[in-house]
Length: 163
Image 1: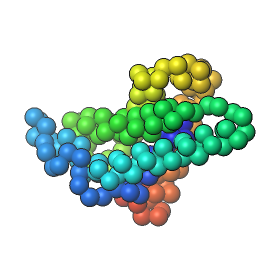
Image 2: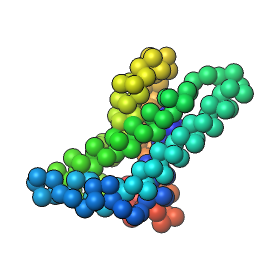
Image 3: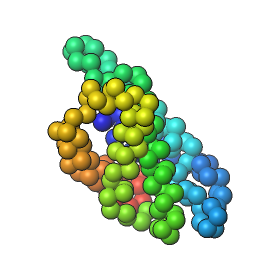
């Protein structure tokens, strides 16, 4: 899941610039995604996840452990940030502001997006690598990693809030 975990943190580091929604509003007169979702963050995050995934592929090849493929890495990294965008869309519909905490959705948007994306486009990888034990481990470890990464991001100044 590392290729899916890295993009959210990397998006905060690389973010800024033009918002993905170009400041446009939905039919409810609320922003589509908000200023926190930028093209620089999206591409920087996805490419960071892919970079980490390629490193995992190289290490795996060296060690004779073949878990990831380039396709699985691209799908996990891209899906993580697509999940984050979908969550942001609904967060705006609920009138939540940028930085407002939304328990569960904030922690699992990347998991839902990445696993759904890889399931749709590379279901064989999912069935070969995600069993019940792995899935439960993902469910347990994700909130801990998410909170830890956000606290670090807050301390180093790339996040406005520690959640």
